[in-house]
Image (cartoon, rainbow, N blue to C red; front, side, top):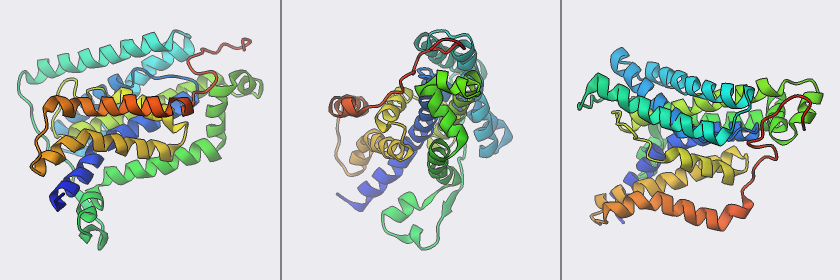
Length: 307
């Protein structure tokens, strides 16, 4: 394979994998607290649309990222109210949030832009001295926007919070033994609510990244199943942030491989390209499904006095 192939593959891996990384880190926090966030993709779409519009009119990608966080958190607040506080079924509410996110963003985009698709300039790349000069790897990995390094930093932060802080211990206890957490004097409802809001914020960043940095435009339904792939990555990562990082970029390669092969002059059918990530999901689940970890109280509403 040519140098162009490997450069394209690594660059595309980051473009496709970083939204998955943010979403899977958020889902990790949510699942560890006992809330399965099926509506993750809806949160990503709202974050993508809110981020795109804010960046378009403010001419600042960072304003767009902040708006994406806000959009994701608004959708996750709905999840927190209905599932955490009212105790409704997490699967049903999650599907509703997904459908609302898809329909709302498509409707708003059509009403605002019609059939046109305005384009953003994206974010400035930061080149790390010396490292960015390394062939293939340098221009692909060490010449990225700041948001990429924020994503890597979030891996370290989430790992530290879940493993080394009282709040992380409370989150894991809320997913494993919420009654014991309640007996210790910690509000289970607030702990799960905060975890779900963090999930929405990270999903919003992932969606905003897709629209602002990844493509520079917003297209309805642009996530195309990424939210569900992020859920699979989270389950297989078993609460480990580093595994979420590896899984996200693995699927990023699967999403990018078709484009890279075309750069190398190898044409494969588009149907195969679109099918590949989901085929990999099925293969990975068949091989590693028994090693997937789910908290004992996942999807189980908690009410004080009930175990």
